[in-house]
Image (cartoon, rainbow over all chains, first blue to last red; front, side, top):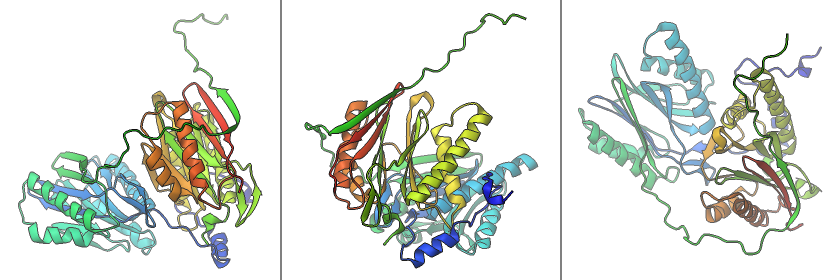
Length: 273
Length: 204
Protein backbone atom coordinates (compact mmCIF):
# COMPACT_ATOMS: atom_id res chain seq x y z
CA UNK A 1 0.00 0.00 0.00
CA UNK A 2 1.44 3.41 -0.87
CA UNK A 3 2.38 5.62 2.06
CA UNK A 4 0.57 8.60 0.60
CA UNK A 5 -2.82 6.86 0.97
CA UNK A 6 -2.55 6.60 4.75
CA UNK A 7 -3.04 9.83 6.70
CA UNK A 8 -1.58 8.94 10.09
CA UNK A 9 -0.86 11.66 12.63
CA UNK A 10 2.90 12.22 12.35
CA UNK A 11 5.35 11.77 15.22
CA UNK A 12 6.34 15.43 15.41
CA UNK A 13 8.73 17.91 13.82
CA UNK A 14 8.24 19.86 10.62
CA UNK A 15 6.76 18.44 7.43
CA UNK A 16 7.97 19.79 4.08
CA UNK A 17 5.29 18.22 1.82
CA UNK A 18 3.91 21.44 0.43
CA UNK A 19 7.24 23.22 -0.23
CA UNK A 20 7.53 22.22 -3.87
CA UNK A 21 3.95 23.30 -4.63
CA UNK A 22 4.46 26.62 -2.83
CA UNK A 23 7.65 27.34 -4.77
CA UNK A 24 5.79 26.66 -8.00
CA UNK A 25 3.08 29.15 -6.95
CA UNK A 26 5.68 31.83 -6.17
CA UNK A 27 7.23 31.32 -9.62
CA UNK A 28 3.79 31.88 -11.14
CA UNK A 29 3.63 35.23 -9.40
CA UNK A 30 1.52 34.41 -6.36
CA UNK A 31 3.46 35.67 -3.37
CA UNK A 32 3.52 34.04 0.00
CA UNK A 33 1.48 35.68 2.76
CA UNK A 34 2.94 37.69 5.59
CA UNK A 35 2.90 36.04 8.99
CA UNK A 36 1.69 37.45 12.27
CA UNK A 37 4.63 39.28 13.82
CA UNK A 38 4.98 40.66 17.26
CA UNK A 39 6.75 43.94 16.35
CA UNK A 40 7.36 44.37 20.03
CA UNK A 41 9.21 45.80 22.88
CA UNK A 42 10.34 43.15 25.37
CA UNK A 43 12.62 43.78 28.35
CA UNK A 44 14.06 42.08 31.40
CA UNK A 45 16.04 43.20 34.37
CA UNK A 46 17.62 41.66 37.45
CA UNK A 47 16.73 43.32 40.76
CA UNK A 48 17.81 42.51 44.30
CA UNK A 49 15.41 39.59 44.89
CA UNK A 50 15.03 38.19 41.37
CA UNK A 51 14.04 39.02 37.79
CA UNK A 52 11.38 41.28 36.27
CA UNK A 53 10.20 40.73 32.68
CA UNK A 54 8.07 43.18 30.70
CA UNK A 55 6.37 43.26 27.28
CA UNK A 56 3.91 45.32 25.25
CA UNK A 57 0.75 43.68 23.85
CA UNK A 58 0.47 44.52 20.15
CA UNK A 59 0.53 41.87 17.40
CA UNK A 60 0.82 43.10 13.81
CA UNK A 61 0.08 41.56 10.43
CA UNK A 62 1.93 43.82 8.01
CA UNK A 63 0.84 47.35 8.85
CA UNK A 64 -2.44 46.30 10.51
CA UNK A 65 -2.82 45.64 14.23
CA UNK A 66 -4.23 42.11 14.39
CA UNK A 67 -4.40 41.76 18.15
CA UNK A 68 -4.56 44.72 20.53
CA UNK A 69 -4.00 42.66 23.65
CA UNK A 70 -1.92 39.57 23.01
CA UNK A 71 0.26 37.81 25.60
CA UNK A 72 3.97 37.91 24.91
CA UNK A 73 5.25 36.64 28.25
CA UNK A 74 5.17 32.86 27.91
CA UNK A 75 5.29 30.28 30.68
CA UNK A 76 8.28 27.94 30.58
CA UNK A 77 8.36 26.56 34.14
CA UNK A 78 6.85 27.70 37.47
CA UNK A 79 10.06 29.67 38.11
CA UNK A 80 10.98 30.57 34.51
CA UNK A 81 9.19 32.86 32.04
CA UNK A 82 10.16 33.96 28.53
CA UNK A 83 9.21 37.02 26.46
CA UNK A 84 9.10 36.47 22.71
CA UNK A 85 9.57 38.78 19.70
CA UNK A 86 9.57 37.95 15.99
CA UNK A 87 7.16 35.64 14.18
CA UNK A 88 4.34 34.91 16.67
CA UNK A 89 3.85 31.26 15.65
CA UNK A 90 7.57 30.58 16.12
CA UNK A 91 7.80 32.15 19.59
CA UNK A 92 4.65 30.34 20.78
CA UNK A 93 5.68 26.98 19.34
CA UNK A 94 9.27 27.12 20.58
CA UNK A 95 8.34 28.21 24.13
CA UNK A 96 5.54 25.60 24.36
CA UNK A 97 7.91 22.90 23.16
CA UNK A 98 10.64 23.77 25.67
CA UNK A 99 8.05 24.07 28.44
CA UNK A 100 6.85 20.49 27.72
CA UNK A 101 10.41 19.19 27.58
CA UNK A 102 11.19 20.83 30.94
CA UNK A 103 8.05 19.35 32.54
CA UNK A 104 9.18 15.87 31.50
CA UNK A 105 12.71 16.67 32.72
CA UNK A 106 11.33 17.75 36.11
CA UNK A 107 9.45 14.49 36.43
CA UNK A 108 12.58 12.61 35.46
CA UNK A 109 14.94 14.37 37.88
CA UNK A 110 12.52 15.37 40.65
CA UNK A 111 14.12 18.83 40.86
CA UNK A 112 13.16 22.40 40.07
CA UNK A 113 14.19 23.44 36.51
CA UNK A 114 17.24 25.63 36.01
CA UNK A 115 17.23 28.64 33.73
CA UNK A 116 20.36 27.46 31.90
CA UNK A 117 18.54 24.23 30.97
CA UNK A 118 15.80 26.21 29.24
CA UNK A 119 18.50 28.38 27.66
CA UNK A 120 20.39 25.43 26.20
CA UNK A 121 17.22 23.76 24.89
CA UNK A 122 16.09 26.97 23.19
CA UNK A 123 19.46 27.90 21.69
CA UNK A 124 20.17 24.46 20.29
CA UNK A 125 16.72 24.28 18.65
CA UNK A 126 17.09 27.75 17.10
CA UNK A 127 20.64 27.12 15.93
CA UNK A 128 19.72 23.86 14.25
CA UNK A 129 17.18 25.78 12.11
CA UNK A 130 19.86 28.37 11.22
CA UNK A 131 17.66 31.38 11.98
CA UNK A 132 14.67 30.28 9.91
CA UNK A 133 12.65 29.84 13.11
CA UNK A 134 12.42 33.56 13.70
CA UNK A 135 12.15 33.85 17.49
CA UNK A 136 14.05 36.46 19.54
CA UNK A 137 13.59 35.76 23.25
CA UNK A 138 14.28 37.29 26.65
CA UNK A 139 14.46 34.42 29.14
CA UNK A 140 14.38 35.08 32.86
CA UNK A 141 13.94 33.04 36.01
CA UNK A 142 15.08 32.27 39.53
CA UNK A 143 16.44 28.86 40.43
CA UNK A 144 18.53 27.61 43.33
CA UNK A 145 21.69 29.17 41.85
CA UNK A 146 20.05 32.61 41.88
CA UNK A 147 18.33 34.94 39.42
CA UNK A 148 19.27 34.70 35.72
CA UNK A 149 18.45 36.81 32.66
CA UNK A 150 19.40 35.83 29.11
CA UNK A 151 18.68 37.01 25.57
CA UNK A 152 18.45 34.52 22.72
CA UNK A 153 18.74 35.58 19.07
CA UNK A 154 17.03 33.76 16.16
CA UNK A 155 20.29 32.25 14.97
CA UNK A 156 20.99 30.71 18.35
CA UNK A 157 23.47 33.06 20.03
CA UNK A 158 22.83 34.05 23.64
CA UNK A 159 23.90 36.77 26.06
CA UNK A 160 23.71 36.84 29.85
CA UNK A 161 22.96 40.32 31.10
CA UNK A 162 21.73 42.30 34.12
CA UNK A 163 19.22 44.15 31.91
CA UNK A 164 18.15 43.40 28.34
CA UNK A 165 15.78 44.58 25.63
CA UNK A 166 14.71 42.96 22.32
CA UNK A 167 12.32 43.66 19.47
CA UNK A 168 11.66 46.66 17.25
CA UNK A 169 11.24 48.90 20.31
CA UNK A 170 14.47 47.71 21.93
CA UNK A 171 16.37 50.95 21.30
CA UNK A 172 13.65 53.05 22.94
CA UNK A 173 13.56 50.75 25.96
CA UNK A 174 17.34 50.43 26.21
CA UNK A 175 17.66 54.22 26.33
CA UNK A 176 15.53 54.21 29.50
CA UNK A 177 17.47 51.30 31.03
CA UNK A 178 20.89 52.75 30.28
CA UNK A 179 20.05 56.02 32.00
CA UNK A 180 18.14 54.70 35.01
CA UNK A 181 19.33 51.16 35.82
CA UNK A 182 21.45 50.48 38.88
CA UNK A 183 22.25 47.33 40.83
CA UNK A 184 20.18 46.42 43.87
CA UNK A 185 16.82 47.87 42.82
CA UNK A 186 13.84 47.09 45.04
CA UNK A 187 10.75 45.37 43.63
CA UNK A 188 8.73 48.56 43.24
CA UNK A 189 11.58 50.49 41.69
CA UNK A 190 12.20 47.61 39.29
CA UNK A 191 8.54 47.37 38.24
CA UNK A 192 8.43 51.15 37.78
CA UNK A 193 11.57 51.08 35.59
CA UNK A 194 10.32 48.19 33.45
CA UNK A 195 6.95 49.93 32.99
CA UNK A 196 8.77 53.09 31.91
CA UNK A 197 10.93 51.21 29.42
CA UNK A 198 7.98 49.41 27.84
CA UNK A 199 5.97 52.64 27.72
CA UNK A 200 8.88 54.26 25.91
CA UNK A 201 8.67 51.46 23.34
CA UNK A 202 4.88 51.71 23.09
CA UNK A 203 4.87 55.44 22.42
CA UNK A 204 7.93 55.73 20.20
CA UNK A 205 7.96 52.50 18.19
CA UNK A 206 5.20 51.85 15.65
CA UNK A 207 5.52 48.07 15.97
CA UNK A 208 4.70 48.14 19.69
CA UNK A 209 1.59 49.40 21.39
CA UNK A 210 -1.41 48.91 23.68
CA UNK A 211 -0.72 47.79 27.24
CA UNK A 212 2.19 46.85 29.49
CA UNK A 213 2.47 43.27 30.85
CA UNK A 214 4.88 42.59 33.70
CA UNK A 215 6.08 39.39 35.36
CA UNK A 216 8.01 39.49 38.66
CA UNK A 217 9.95 36.32 39.52
CA UNK A 218 11.50 35.82 42.95
CA UNK A 219 12.70 32.75 44.81
CA UNK A 220 9.70 30.43 45.10
CA UNK A 221 7.18 33.06 44.02
CA UNK A 222 5.90 34.58 40.77
CA UNK A 223 3.60 37.51 40.09
CA UNK A 224 2.10 37.88 36.61
CA UNK A 225 0.74 41.42 36.27
CA UNK A 226 -1.33 41.17 33.10
CA UNK A 227 -2.16 44.66 31.77
CA UNK A 228 -0.32 46.33 34.64
CA UNK A 229 -0.56 49.66 32.78
CA UNK A 230 -3.15 50.57 30.19
CA UNK A 231 -1.96 53.87 28.74
CA UNK A 232 -4.03 53.55 25.54
CA UNK A 233 -7.69 53.21 26.47
CA UNK A 234 -10.36 53.44 23.79
CA UNK A 235 -11.98 56.85 24.20
CA UNK A 236 -14.02 57.19 21.05
CA UNK A 237 -16.87 54.77 21.74
CA UNK A 238 -20.24 56.15 20.78
CA UNK A 239 -22.61 55.66 23.72
CA UNK A 240 -25.63 55.29 21.48
CA UNK A 241 -23.99 52.51 19.51
CA UNK A 242 -25.30 51.45 16.14
CA UNK A 243 -28.92 50.48 15.68
CA UNK A 244 -29.99 49.12 12.35
CA UNK A 245 -33.52 50.19 11.52
CA UNK A 246 -33.47 48.62 8.06
CA UNK A 247 -32.91 44.92 8.68
CA UNK A 248 -30.62 42.76 6.56
CA UNK A 249 -32.45 40.95 3.81
CA UNK A 250 -32.51 37.23 4.57
CA UNK A 251 -33.05 34.75 1.75
CA UNK A 252 -33.19 31.55 3.74
CA UNK A 253 -33.29 30.55 7.42
CA UNK A 254 -32.60 27.09 8.76
CA UNK A 255 -32.97 26.36 12.47
CA UNK A 256 -31.40 23.22 13.92
CA UNK A 257 -32.39 22.57 17.53
CA UNK A 258 -29.55 21.08 19.57
CA UNK A 259 -30.25 17.84 21.37
CA UNK A 260 -30.45 17.99 25.17
CA UNK A 261 -27.62 16.26 26.95
CA UNK A 262 -28.34 12.78 28.33
CA UNK A 263 -29.34 12.75 32.01
CA UNK A 264 -27.94 9.91 34.11
CA UNK A 265 -30.35 8.63 36.76
CA UNK A 266 -28.73 7.43 39.97
CA UNK A 267 -29.93 4.07 41.25
CA UNK A 268 -31.89 3.03 38.19
CA UNK A 269 -33.32 -0.45 37.71
CA UNK A 270 -30.76 -3.18 37.28
CA UNK A 271 -30.85 -5.34 34.18
CA UNK A 272 -32.50 -8.76 34.42
CA UNK A 273 -30.05 -11.67 34.39
CA UNK B 1 -0.56 39.36 -6.36
CA UNK B 2 -0.77 37.52 -3.08
CA UNK B 3 -1.76 33.87 -2.89
CA UNK B 4 -4.59 34.86 -0.57
CA UNK B 5 -6.10 36.99 -3.33
CA UNK B 6 -6.40 34.07 -5.72
CA UNK B 7 -9.83 32.94 -4.52
CA UNK B 8 -10.98 35.83 -2.29
CA UNK B 9 -12.84 35.42 1.00
CA UNK B 10 -14.26 37.24 4.00
CA UNK B 11 -14.82 35.72 7.42
CA UNK B 12 -15.87 37.20 10.73
CA UNK B 13 -16.86 35.78 14.11
CA UNK B 14 -18.33 37.68 17.05
CA UNK B 15 -19.10 36.90 20.67
CA UNK B 16 -22.47 37.68 22.23
CA UNK B 17 -24.20 36.85 25.50
CA UNK B 18 -23.93 33.04 25.82
CA UNK B 19 -23.91 32.80 22.04
CA UNK B 20 -21.63 33.42 19.10
CA UNK B 21 -22.04 34.21 15.42
CA UNK B 22 -19.79 33.29 12.51
CA UNK B 23 -20.29 34.68 9.03
CA UNK B 24 -18.68 34.38 5.61
CA UNK B 25 -19.19 35.64 2.08
CA UNK B 26 -20.26 33.24 -0.69
CA UNK B 27 -18.07 34.04 -3.66
CA UNK B 28 -15.52 31.66 -5.12
CA UNK B 29 -13.36 33.22 -7.81
CA UNK B 30 -10.25 32.49 -9.85
CA UNK B 31 -8.49 35.85 -9.68
CA UNK B 32 -11.01 38.23 -11.22
CA UNK B 33 -13.47 35.70 -12.63
CA UNK B 34 -16.33 34.47 -10.40
CA UNK B 35 -16.76 30.71 -10.55
CA UNK B 36 -19.39 30.06 -7.86
CA UNK B 37 -21.78 32.17 -5.81
CA UNK B 38 -22.70 29.61 -3.17
CA UNK B 39 -19.33 28.47 -1.90
CA UNK B 40 -19.30 27.19 1.65
CA UNK B 41 -16.48 28.48 3.85
CA UNK B 42 -17.86 27.70 7.29
CA UNK B 43 -17.89 24.06 8.31
CA UNK B 44 -19.48 22.33 11.28
CA UNK B 45 -17.12 20.21 13.37
CA UNK B 46 -19.73 19.35 15.96
CA UNK B 47 -22.97 20.96 17.14
CA UNK B 48 -21.23 23.64 19.15
CA UNK B 49 -18.03 24.14 17.15
CA UNK B 50 -17.65 25.77 13.77
CA UNK B 51 -14.57 26.57 11.73
CA UNK B 52 -14.36 29.04 8.85
CA UNK B 53 -11.42 28.75 6.46
CA UNK B 54 -10.32 31.71 4.34
CA UNK B 55 -7.55 31.88 1.77
CA UNK B 56 -6.77 29.40 -0.98
CA UNK B 57 -9.91 27.29 -1.45
CA UNK B 58 -8.09 24.04 -2.22
CA UNK B 59 -6.03 24.28 0.99
CA UNK B 60 -9.19 25.20 2.93
CA UNK B 61 -10.94 22.03 1.74
CA UNK B 62 -7.91 19.81 2.37
CA UNK B 63 -7.41 21.26 5.82
CA UNK B 64 -11.10 20.82 6.64
CA UNK B 65 -10.94 17.14 5.63
CA UNK B 66 -7.85 16.57 7.81
CA UNK B 67 -9.50 18.30 10.79
CA UNK B 68 -12.73 16.32 10.48
CA UNK B 69 -10.65 13.14 10.36
CA UNK B 70 -8.73 14.09 13.51
CA UNK B 71 -11.93 15.08 15.30
CA UNK B 72 -13.63 11.79 14.44
CA UNK B 73 -10.62 9.87 15.80
CA UNK B 74 -10.79 12.00 18.95
CA UNK B 75 -14.51 11.23 19.31
CA UNK B 76 -13.84 7.50 19.00
CA UNK B 77 -11.06 7.57 21.57
CA UNK B 78 -12.52 10.01 24.10
CA UNK B 79 -16.25 9.28 23.54
CA UNK B 80 -17.05 12.98 23.59
CA UNK B 81 -16.76 16.13 21.45
CA UNK B 82 -13.62 18.26 21.42
CA UNK B 83 -13.66 21.48 23.39
CA UNK B 84 -13.09 24.61 21.27
CA UNK B 85 -9.83 25.47 23.06
CA UNK B 86 -8.46 21.99 22.40
CA UNK B 87 -9.56 22.17 18.77
CA UNK B 88 -7.82 25.52 18.35
CA UNK B 89 -4.57 23.98 19.66
CA UNK B 90 -5.02 21.07 17.23
CA UNK B 91 -5.45 23.41 14.26
CA UNK B 92 -2.46 25.47 15.41
CA UNK B 93 -0.28 22.34 15.62
CA UNK B 94 -1.36 21.10 12.18
CA UNK B 95 -0.59 24.48 10.63
CA UNK B 96 2.77 24.92 12.41
CA UNK B 97 3.86 21.46 11.28
CA UNK B 98 3.98 22.98 7.79
CA UNK B 99 5.92 26.05 8.97
CA UNK B 100 8.28 26.14 5.98
CA UNK B 101 5.73 25.12 3.34
CA UNK B 102 2.44 26.32 4.78
CA UNK B 103 -1.21 25.80 3.93
CA UNK B 104 -2.41 29.14 2.56
CA UNK B 105 -5.34 29.26 4.91
CA UNK B 106 -6.43 31.47 7.77
CA UNK B 107 -8.90 29.70 10.02
CA UNK B 108 -11.52 31.35 12.22
CA UNK B 109 -12.73 29.05 14.98
CA UNK B 110 -15.89 29.69 16.99
CA UNK B 111 -17.51 27.45 19.58
CA UNK B 112 -19.34 27.14 22.86
CA UNK B 113 -17.02 25.77 25.52
CA UNK B 114 -17.65 24.57 29.03
CA UNK B 115 -20.88 25.91 30.54
CA UNK B 116 -21.69 27.28 27.08
CA UNK B 117 -19.17 30.08 27.30
CA UNK B 118 -18.50 31.39 23.77
CA UNK B 119 -14.97 31.03 22.41
CA UNK B 120 -13.55 32.58 19.24
CA UNK B 121 -10.08 32.59 17.82
CA UNK B 122 -8.24 33.15 14.56
CA UNK B 123 -4.77 32.17 13.35
CA UNK B 124 -2.37 33.23 10.66
CA UNK B 125 -1.34 30.64 8.08
CA UNK B 126 1.33 29.08 10.33
CA UNK B 127 -0.79 28.65 13.43
CA UNK B 128 -0.16 31.73 15.61
CA UNK B 129 -3.31 31.77 17.73
CA UNK B 130 -5.05 35.04 18.38
CA UNK B 131 -7.72 34.72 21.05
CA UNK B 132 -10.14 37.60 21.27
CA UNK B 133 -12.99 38.43 23.57
CA UNK B 134 -14.98 40.46 21.03
CA UNK B 135 -14.49 39.64 17.35
CA UNK B 136 -12.04 38.10 14.92
CA UNK B 137 -11.74 38.59 11.15
CA UNK B 138 -9.95 36.93 8.23
CA UNK B 139 -9.79 37.07 4.45
CA UNK B 140 -9.19 39.61 1.69
CA UNK B 141 -11.76 41.98 3.21
CA UNK B 142 -10.09 41.80 6.64
CA UNK B 143 -8.97 45.44 6.76
CA UNK B 144 -12.50 46.73 6.14
CA UNK B 145 -13.86 44.12 8.53
CA UNK B 146 -11.56 45.34 11.32
CA UNK B 147 -12.93 48.83 10.87
CA UNK B 148 -16.58 47.83 10.63
CA UNK B 149 -16.42 45.50 13.63
CA UNK B 150 -14.56 48.04 15.82
CA UNK B 151 -17.33 50.53 15.16
CA UNK B 152 -20.38 48.27 15.32
CA UNK B 153 -19.47 45.77 18.06
CA UNK B 154 -21.04 46.02 21.51
CA UNK B 155 -20.37 43.55 24.31
CA UNK B 156 -23.11 41.15 25.55
CA UNK B 157 -25.49 41.32 22.62
CA UNK B 158 -28.41 38.87 22.43
CA UNK B 159 -28.67 36.48 19.49
CA UNK B 160 -30.94 38.61 17.26
CA UNK B 161 -28.98 41.81 17.76
CA UNK B 162 -25.73 39.91 17.26
CA UNK B 163 -27.03 38.53 13.97
CA UNK B 164 -27.96 42.02 12.77
CA UNK B 165 -24.59 43.48 13.78
CA UNK B 166 -22.46 40.77 12.23
CA UNK B 167 -24.50 40.83 9.00
CA UNK B 168 -24.18 44.59 8.65
CA UNK B 169 -20.45 44.47 9.38
CA UNK B 170 -19.91 41.67 6.84
CA UNK B 171 -21.99 43.16 4.04
CA UNK B 172 -20.57 46.67 4.40
CA UNK B 173 -17.00 45.31 4.36
CA UNK B 174 -17.39 42.97 1.38
CA UNK B 175 -18.99 45.81 -0.59
CA UNK B 176 -15.59 47.48 -0.43
CA UNK B 177 -13.72 44.39 -1.61
CA UNK B 178 -13.79 43.18 -5.21
CA UNK B 179 -12.78 39.63 -4.40
CA UNK B 180 -15.48 38.74 -1.87
CA UNK B 181 -19.21 39.22 -1.82
CA UNK B 182 -22.30 37.76 -3.52
CA UNK B 183 -24.23 37.58 -0.25
CA UNK B 184 -23.46 36.17 3.15
CA UNK B 185 -23.79 32.97 5.14
CA UNK B 186 -24.35 33.52 8.87
CA UNK B 187 -24.53 30.95 11.67
CA UNK B 188 -25.77 32.13 15.08
CA UNK B 189 -25.28 29.48 17.76
CA UNK B 190 -26.91 29.55 21.19
CA UNK B 191 -26.93 26.66 23.72
CA UNK B 192 -30.32 25.49 22.40
CA UNK B 193 -30.20 25.95 18.64
CA UNK B 194 -28.16 26.75 15.56
CA UNK B 195 -29.68 29.33 13.19
CA UNK B 196 -28.23 29.32 9.72
CA UNK B 197 -29.19 32.25 7.49
CA UNK B 198 -28.30 33.24 3.96
CA UNK B 199 -28.14 36.96 3.30
CA UNK B 200 -28.91 38.87 0.14
CA UNK B 201 -26.07 41.18 -0.83
CA UNK B 202 -24.77 43.05 -3.84
CA UNK B 203 -24.14 40.72 -6.75
CA UNK B 204 -21.07 42.35 -8.25
